[in-house]
Amino acid sequence: MLYNTLHHRWLRLVVALVGEMIIAVSLNFFVVPLNMYSGGIMGVCQLIRTLLMDFSGISFGTHDIAGILYFIVNIPILLYAYKQLGKELVAKTLVCTVAYSFFYSLIPTPAQPIVSDYLTGCLLGGILTGVGGGLVLTCGCSSGGLDIIGLCLSKRGSGITVGRFSLFFNIFLYAACLVLFVPEVAIYSVIYNFFASIVMDRMHKQNINVQALIFTREDEGKLGRFIIEKLDRSVTYWTGTGAYSGKDLHVLCVCLSKYEIEELLHTVHTIDPNAFLTVQEGTRIYGNFVRKLD
Image: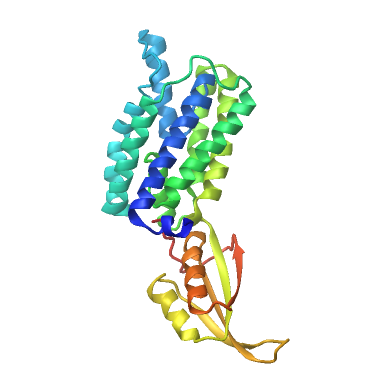
C-alpha cells in the first residue's frame, strides 16, 4: 500500500497535503502557545506578527496572520525556483504553500498551552513538524520557504541537505529572538527546530543514499535494463560463485536514493522472487551521481 501511494501522482499530493496539516497542527498546538518560534521563513513571519502586535497593539484573536504573511513572502521564492526546479515541482509547491497557509491560519491556537512543559512541547512539536515536512518532501512536494531554497542548493550538488540549510539559516533568526525576547524563547525555539530538522532529514527518503547488491540466477541484463531505463541509474554487474552451492550467479551493484529502493525491490521480486538483496543505507557517494528530488 505504501509503495502504491508513494508512486501514484495524485495520492502523493494528498499525502503531502496531510503532511502540511500535521505541520500546522504541531505549530498551533505545541509551538505558538508556548511563545516559541518556528524556523525558516515561517519563523520570520511569526516574528513580524509579534512585532506588529507589540508595537501597534493589534490583536488577531485565536487566528494567526503569520500564515498569510508566509504565502506573500513565498511568491518571489517560487519565481526563483521556477528556473531551478521546473514548473511541475513549483506548481505542487504552490498548492502545498496555499494549503499550509490555510491550515495555519484556520486552525485556532489554544488559549492555554496543551503541554505546559517547554521541553516536552519542543519534543512533540519538533517530531510532528519533522514527520509532516518529511512526508511533504518524500512526496516530491514542498512547503515553500527554506525547503525550496534548500532543494535548489541540494540539486546543484552542494552537499547541503534541506535540514542542514534550515539549521544554518535559523542561527540568525534565533539570534534576533535572543536580542528581542527573553533567552528562554530563543533557547527552546532552537531545541524545537533541532528535533524538527533531524526528523525531517530522516523522513526525506530522496535525501538518503543507499547502495544495493542484487544476487540472482536470472537474466542480469533484464534487471540492468530496468535500472537504466526506468530508474535512470547506472549499474555494474559481474559473475560470482555461490560458496554453498558451487553454482554461478550474477551480482548487480547500484547506488540510488532510499525512495528509489522501494521501486527497485518491487521490480526485483517481480522478475526473480528468489533474488537475494543487501541494502547499505547512508552510503557516501562522490562523483557523477544525480540527486533526484521529485
